[in-house]
Amino acid sequence: MRLRSAVLALVFAAAPAPLAAQARPTGILARRLAPLFRGRAWRYADWGALVVSLTRGDTLFSYHADRRFLPASNAKLFTTAAALHYLGTGFRFFTILYGDGTVVRDTLDGDLVLYGTGDPTFGRDTASLAPFADSVVRTGIRAVRGDIVGDASFLGAELTGPGWAPDNLDYAFAAPPSALGAAANQVRVTVAPGSRAGAPAQVTVDPPTDYYSVTSEVVTGHRWNRTRISVVRGPGSAVTLRGRISPRRRHWTTSIVVKEPAAFAASLLRQLLTARGVAVAGSTRAVTDDPSGRASQLLARAEGGSAPFSGAIAVRASPPLGALVTEINRRSDNLSAELVFRSVGRAVGGAGTFASGAEAVQRFLAGEVGVAPASVRITDGSGLSVENEATPRALVQLLAYERRTPADDRDAFWQSLPAPGAGLGHRMEGTAADGRLRAKTGTMRDVSALTGYVSAEGGEELAFSLVINHMTRIRAARLAQDRMGVVLARFDRGEDGEAAK
Picture 1 (cartoon, rainbow, N blue to C red):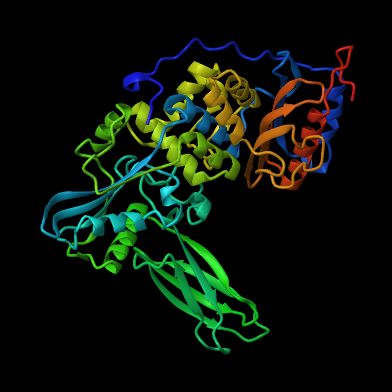
Picture 2: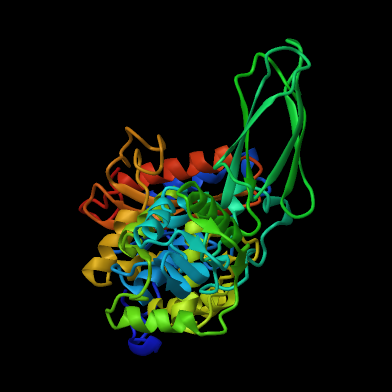
């Protein structure tokens, strides 16, 4: 684990000069792009765009480039770039299992603690927990007199970002970012029809857990009935399913977001221990405060290159950050982005809060990238917050900065960006942009953004950002973005300095 600044100190190099602004760009490129933003779909839309040649340093197209817009998942570009800068491509997250007590014969006289530091890959499924349970058995422990503790104190108790819409909190894309989690902090519930009309539906829960109390009142309907199932969350971890399922339907599925990820992870670990014959006398609980300063100890040990908690029963290291940023940007994974964002806050500002992460990212943008402080407002790491704001110029400045960073950071950032057929799906496949464009998407209810690089046919490298707010038809926004990508890919100034295509 490596911190770019010694002893967590921030040393900012002189800020690079801001990209030159051109108020009214001319030329064939500008005339080809302008028609893409006309029509009924654009009547109430607010949008801004900037296209800059990184090869020559001039502005090729600009429209409201200094107006702040809601960037949606384009905010992940800020998060991953700041993480690479502060932590380095080799940074790894650790998950540690240790006994907080003494072992007498085959009994741990104390608590068994599972300590997380925000590893996005540990909490993706339940497979990561099994080796920890196996390690307990290998140590000879057959009984635990204390509790099974899920320790999420590395990032603290915050589980909802500022500006997150309350209506989104029960959806998987807004799963709470805890330093310790499991199964992407959600439970998958599947309902299948019974053997006949009126029979109770068959319900399965994945992963199997006693953390949630799932009660089903769903019955099998008649052939002409439609499936109508509602999920009612009661107090604590009680969940009730109500409605009916058509016998013509194979199954109906939904995800239930876990409200206390650390407690959920601890409960799953307890189930695995019980299945292996380890008896636990105490309860299952979560910890989110850090009175012992364990987070600081972990950072100090990791910075010094020593194994964290050398007396641990089991330690799992994540893939390096250079690989994780690819997953964040290509998959646009909100949970992973928030964990990295708050981990930057912990490493740089000493607290794993949203506010600390935001301050670190803003300081990076102002001090390293040269972004005007008034052109961005960062409140979370994924872009879920409706309080985030950024100008197209700030996004393009970040892209220009990344092309000047050390090779490891530069390559990791470049590789993380989606491309046609690799993260962008079928968008722009088979066009001039295929193989020439890499760009990050951003989508919310009435927001669509695309920011990235294009290797133009004329030999120039272009950086662009197109951010659209209040768009009534997201499909029309994406169509304009895709056509813009193709126009940029075909860009060639020709001998006279103008675009020849």
